[in-house]
Image 1 (cartoon, rainbow, N blue to C red):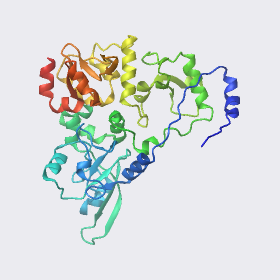
Image 2: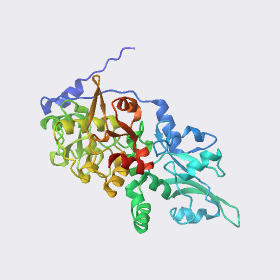
Image 3: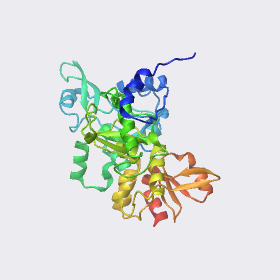
Image 4: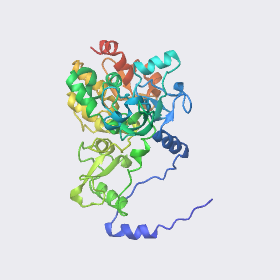
Length: 382
């Protein structure tokens, strides 16, 4: 079927802005992905809607068909009223976000004694049920449940495995599920529906033209890290400093690469793929736009999915790794997320290129493998 679209109104709107080169792509949405995300937002029953062996924990975080998921027990028993008031209190069921010992034990036994729900949402509120002890009245609601501490330790989220007990309590108390999804978004096809649904809201009708104009004025250069993206224009964004998408005054706009944009406060909704972060870091290195002579800089520029590993490397005083390294494999260029070139040790988020790197003499770890076998990992680097 041939489509005829009249762009005359758009041209008239853009005309006052002068010559603007606008880059955009039209992509089709995936009905299947949207359907899965919608169901996961409400929660599916483990063992009925989803089987345990369909949930992949090989990268540490839990993955179902390309979606980041969490497991928890909705039945809070006779403690339900207290849990609805404070879901983080002692006795409330915890939320599993990673392949912790509880999940491993369930896999090894091939069964689980309680009903678990599989869910993917970022607001921290989980559907719970229970019943009064004396009246047996069934009570339902949503509670702000705490995250499993074993999961946090496994991922070293917020350096959890290296900090004191009082500090751990503060991490659990202030834990953000939306921040978790943002941190590990590189492993997944999309972010949860509750986040991605807001990404295009409240923009003015002329925003695409305004964004293109301000990026063009700066020759497609990130105002934060300085990387030039004239060859990858789609990786440069225009950011509203005060968060008001309707305020398009130049003083409220900042031109940022996708990686710097993602790392701005309150940008949990912004999805940036691992391949895009790799490309940005490759260009930063080629253009000498970052200095990774200390851990603060590495943490600033690395893919956020590597932060748990990097924090552990920092706390154990492991020699600094490097970002933006690319290997030429017969004109097929392979980017490495984090590496120690002299030792030929590589850490990959997407393990698809493992065999290619191994053929070039590299020892390859995933971020989770490096964390889970840290003693062996660090011995190869020191």
